[in-house]
Image 1 (cartoon, rainbow, N blue to C red):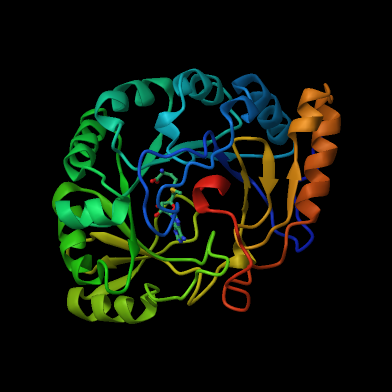
Image 2 (tube, rainbow, N blue to C red):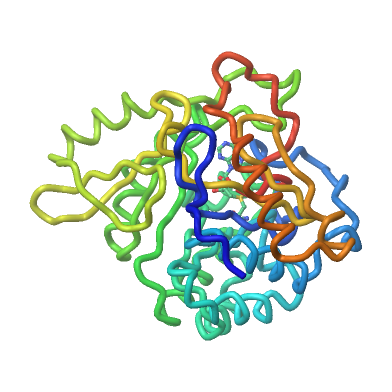
Length: 330
Ligand code: SAM
């Protein structure tokens, strides 16, 4: 039975978007995301099974979930993922099924992902310099990412969005080059500000780059004008007036978008995080493992949504979030 009231949180925001983490493991070690040498992962036996994930999503769909992004950790590292994707893609109420990846495993998986039903891909890529890429990612192979992107295009994914974390003193000299690479290949670049995650006692803000300055520089240099882009995310888009190439800016720190936040995040082990920048969560695994009915799950979901915090406090309390992005689901 479906509960027809819209999924509204305590601040009147309609929460229709779920980021579903299918693993907290990743084959890269981006220094801002996972600590070097980190091996403190959730035992795989603690992950929700695909059947449990599907049940919770069915309950969420019943109260109005419309959009879902599969993420992690590196989602392509979760065995058998396409079986889950096929099930989710078959749900007509989900109007948007997308996936975030570092693309290192895409070369061999792109076609199957497309066939299973992924509609859109976001690829994280912070540098086009092989050595720098390896430094940022703790040894990653840029060539594998480029081959993965090529395979994704051949498999028919379009548009592919490239997410570049803009990091002061690390890759801020590459922003124009990355924009040129994206224009040349038909990708849409989004620049993102780094947030203090998993940083308790470690956040210095050393690599934080305020994107307002970068945006103003690019507006002038490329004659950018405001633009729209489908996807419903927090990015604000601009386009080159003459060529229509787009670029997005995601500015959780310098200009946050909490008032229009429409999402929550489910970790691989079943915790629903209500805000990336707060610790509020609700553990759904006990309910799922104790045989909760769809109605009981929906009731718990609604209760959780009402606890969604008004906004993050990354600026006021940069040491607050001890979870790494890979654990929460980026
Ligand atoms: N492995 C997939 C990928 O690379 O896209 C999905 C997970 S990854 C955690 C998702 C995104 O989170 C990446 O684009 C990464 O750059 C971003 N991210 C990780 N830590 C971050 C931080 N502290 N601040 C901002 N973005 C972060």
